[in-house]
Length: 92
Image 1 (cartoon, rainbow, N blue to C red):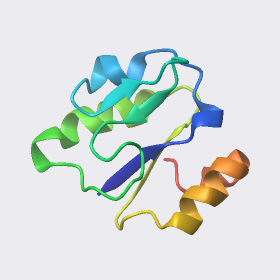
Image 2 (spheres, rainbow, N blue to C red):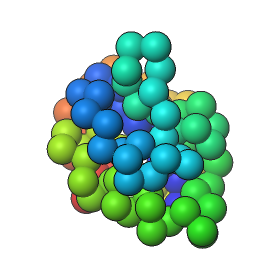
Image 3 (spheres, rainbow, N blue to C red):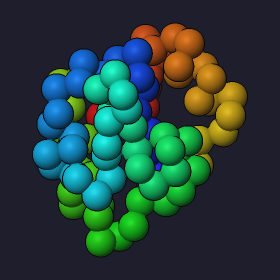
């Protein structure tokens, strides 16, 4: 499983880092990102961290955390960063 955060949807509430501190951190503006691969969505979530990830993913109030079974491609990253409304298909 792979994950990334859509910066435009993140409201910097802090829930993801509270639920999964080994996976999520914040940039200088307080926007969350995935620490594994600097928010690229190309590094698999370690099995040992999947329960934490699920907590963060299901508790994100804006749906900014995306997941999928394959690495995110550059085109997918660009599309979700440009049009956050398209992310409804990948969240929950």
